Amino acid sequence: MNDDTAEFSVDDEVVAPGGARGVVCDVREMTNGERVYGVHDMNGSVRYYTAEGIKRLLQ
Image 1 (cartoon, rainbow, N blue to C red):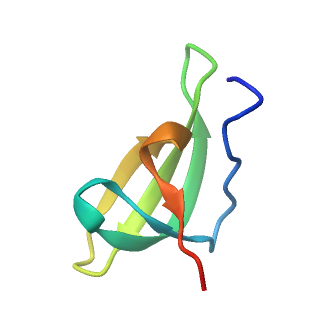
Image 2: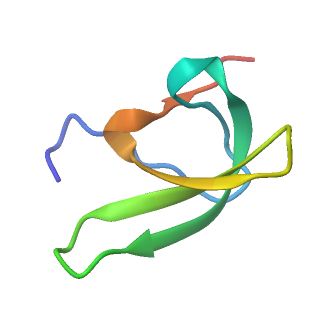
């Protein structure tokens, strides 16, 4: 993971690809060492993204 990549924590509000808004509900490390974030969206789905795939929601 490079130093320019944002770190996210559980309960952070984020925007995923396609404009889907949600809350980080899980943080896992894959076998290759990359961290992925489970995002619980407004439809009740949980999808996993790398830090490059989500943006922090500005409040």
